[in-house]
Image (tube, rainbow, N blue to C red):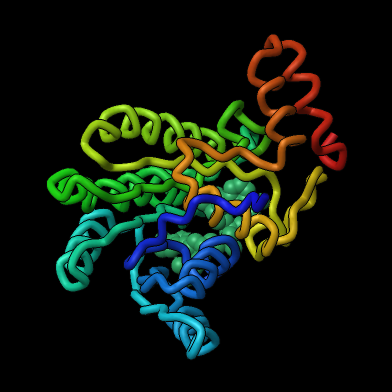
Length: 260
Ligand SMILES: NC(=O)c1ccc[n+]([C@@H]2O[C@H](COP(=O)([O-])OP(=O)(O)OC[C@H]3O[C@@H](n4cnc5c(N)ncnc54)[C@H](OP(=O)(O)O)[C@@H]3O)[C@@H](O)[C@H]2O)c1
């Protein structure tokens, strides 16, 4: 008996952060399955290279977009929605993760996280939510993280941005399900991408990019409310969430022995 997910394929999708890592991989995964993907990011040359790479296998339309500009992002996504006859899938994937150590807080890093991960994701998800509701169909997806459960050491602002995204998506999910619009929260553990290349701390249960992308793509097709993976890291995250602060603080300091 095949374990393939029940396929509910899309005609059109928009993915932010399509120039690198998970967003790039997911855009290609969808395009290869016949979805016309509007791949958005700031680096057009990377998006154009991806579109060229996929020629003959699938369609990626490169879109220059800086999600830190919330107003422009909303307008651009609404214009694409109109032009393509309605976006069926919107994935808020773009994010940044500069460290924000509490003892050397840099406002520009904090501001970047708030602008891209919080305001940018909210702008992306809200852009066509009203139109999906009018159409009684659509799928909104946010690329959150297992780090949404706790303020991770030196990365408190990043964790907080993902907590915002996960909680926001949960509220949307409850509101939109009766209106025919699906909402999915993706919560990966560590994945090998250009974004994690420079990490100096340990990354347990690190996944290869292709593996992670395949898990995400299949979760979207199943239309699940949340997909947290790999299970070992998801189990650890659940545990972290419930342990008392004293225990958490000691455990968290041990994540990065180089800094002790
Ligand atoms: N990799 C992991 O271990 C991991 C784990 C959990 C969650 N995640 C989440 O997965 C998503 C992708 O992560 P990744 O590791 O693939 O990251 P990545 O390789 O660093 O790629 C980040 C993407 O975001 C885009 N981006 C950044 N700022 C932007 C802006 N202002 N406007 C538009 N696009 C912007 C970048 O494109 P441009 O620079 O071209 O604009 C790039 O395409 C993120 O939401 C991340 O938080 C990753």
